[in-house]
Amino acid sequence: MLNRIVKPSISGVPKAVKCFSTTPQNNFKVAVAGASGGIGQPLSLLLKQNPLVTELSLYDVVHTPGVAADLSHIETPAKVKGYVGAESICDAFKGCDVVVIPAGVPRKPGMTRDDLFNTNASIVRDIAKACVEACPKAMLAIISNPVNSTVPIASEIFKKAGKYDPKRIFGVTTLDVVRANTFIAEAKCLDPLTVKVPVIGGHAGVTIMPLISQASPKVSFSESELKALTVRIQDAGTEVVKAKAGAGSATLSMAYAGARFAIALLRGLKGEANVIECAFVKSDVTEAPYFATPLLLGKGGIEKNLGLGTLSAFEQQLLKAGIPELIASIKKGEQFVNK
Ligand SMILES: NC(=O)C1=CN([C@@H]2O[C@H](COP(=O)(O)OP(=O)(O)OC[C@H]3O[C@@H](n4cnc5c(N)ncnc54)[C@H](O)[C@@H]3O)[C@@H](O)[C@H]2O)C=CC1
Ligand SMILES: O=C([O-])CC(=O)C(=O)O
Image (cartoon, rainbow, N blue to C red; front, top):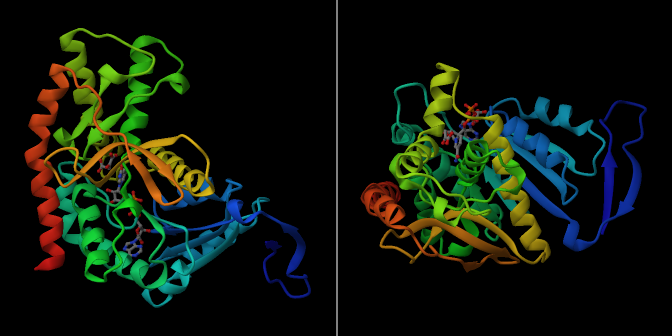
């Protein structure tokens, strides 16, 4: 397949200055919805640097032409284009393999993620409607909070249109895994790059359930240390919200985590073996109809749900404590679309 490096259209400067080939398996179009925001900009920067991305479509209600012009000067193959405003959303998403969605408002100190529902529910609903129209087969990676409700919202929109494939809609919980890896590495003086901790459940407070008993390499903690670590992982988003003191929530670590997850989706699409990430998806592993667990990713999205594994007694308590809130948040999202 032909690809082009396109230079800015400055008069007198030839547009396509070089053509080269990429294989179809390494040739993916990714859109970022909310691309001008605190997460959207660094996330787009990270995606621009990945060779699997050959087209990067930046959608937002403000500023995307500038963000796109800026990123387009980076010497990597991805062709970057900015789309601003609702009238351009379908053009932005057309032909996308992956749509990453960090559109919406972030928390301020004192707010819960659920306090964002009133604003972000309709933003995610409208973006999902555009995906149904423009790229119904794309993988959706939803970052916008409250994830426990926005994933059911997007899913209901796809169901209503008769285009629902539960293997392709993901709530991004990678930041919980990234934080668990970091905090455990710090506690045990390990190289954080070697630590892998599954985090299951959802993405808010007690619905975030780190499975430290399944950490690799194996680590052990006293009951009180385990409790403190678990609470820190559950409250890590709030830790950042407080530290930013009104200037928003995690953006840079989320951009890192969002890029890692989007690239994992592309690696799966490309046919790479053994691509595993946790994410919040339609699920039957617990009584909650959506639940985050480790997933094997492949050409069709979720290839296999790897389930809960063996839970310690402490983790069984976490599960019991988190399920009711999770079920309520899911219901709230579903009812928002079906009211
Ligand atoms: N899943 C996770 O682990 C995390 C989720 N988040 C969530 O990500 C979301 C975004 O956070 P930030 O980037 O910090 O916020 P931000 O306010 O910096 O950026 C949001 C962007 O969304 C855009 N936007 C608003 N309405 C839109 C629409 N209808 N269509 C397209 N774009 C629209 C805004 O113009 C803005 O550029 C928040 O809901 C936040 O809670 C944040 C951190 C971690
Ligand atoms: O805490 C927030 O509002 C943002 C978020 O989801 C996180 O950092 O985990």
